[in-house]
Length: 258
Image 1 (cartoon, rainbow, N blue to C red):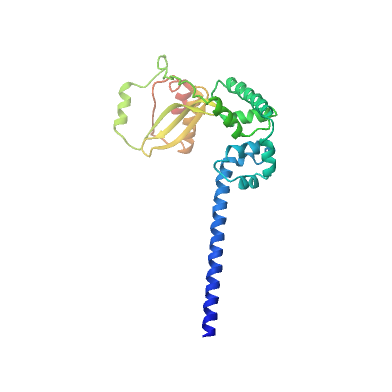
Image 2 (cartoon, helix red, strand yellow):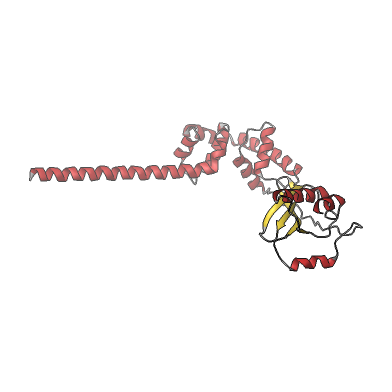
């Protein structure tokens, strides 16, 4: 009976240890999940000065624990509370100065940039500032990146260059694998408006050639067609279909396509 009682106590102790270990693992998982979520929001300021880290902590104090945020950003809680108690006028002056610098860049870029690019320009000018703080100031001021005005880019078909007969396009109705289609579009990018010329295989719907440029020139469409011909090992008996734009009717394009 004594051995049985001892065995029950041993089993009970093992279960107790396992339960404690399971509880510890759950706490670790919760802690790591919280740290990971915080790092996704504030990881960009890990190398910033202490004041920037304090500002990030202050902005996220309603979402995350103070102890965890200070540990992840390697700052002390006492330092944060001391920073928070500093004269409001000093912080306001610093924020006002930074807001003026942000506004200058914002206007210089015709109000088409957001916090990432503005932060890069501020750092290049000597400001030790994080993206989160720039974004916070812009949000408070109501400054948002505006999309550029849409540009109406139409094909210029009013020219005296040679074009294929209209009836030639009817061949496309007899769809087979020997035809490729050339077209271009205008796209907004971080570098501004760019023209994208694409050569599409109508049989496989696969893009076999492409080129990008700031201008809609014959060189743009020639580069796209050259890529397509190179990738297809210069096939014969292929019909290249495009619109009647001046780029496609240029001498340079005609030499390549024929």
